[in-house]
Amino acid sequence: MIGKKARVTPLDIAAFSLALAVVVLVAVRVYARGGGAPAVHLRGPRQEWIFPLDSERTVAVPGPLGDTVVQIRKGQVRVLSSPCPEKICVRSGAIARPGQWIACLPNRVFVEIQAGPRETVDAYSF
Image (cartoon, rainbow, N blue to C red):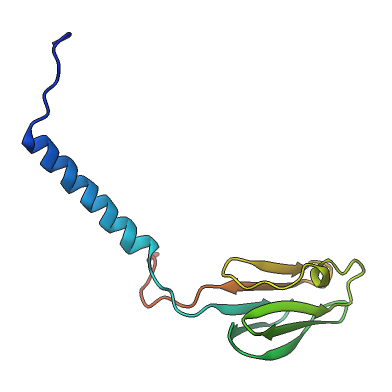
């Protein structure tokens, strides 16, 4: 039927609207999960720690070069001092949002802010 114009029927509009509503509903349920309060995940060569982002503490994370001192204060995390030669982790400043991180590669220390634990399972593996 080349040359004929397609007609949009009320059933076409209803089917499109239903499909659009399903896509929006799925997107909202997948991407709008609260996830809980953010947490600070500290990883050293031999240990890991998880602290709430709203806590107030200073942690010395041991590494092969010595201790990397990490401060959690007023909803922010920063590396106060590190025995690494370049001090890039110290100069990087504070982080405050989930997904942000600071790494001290020579001392093998990694600091990351993660979204809080979810109440449901993301996936199953068999």
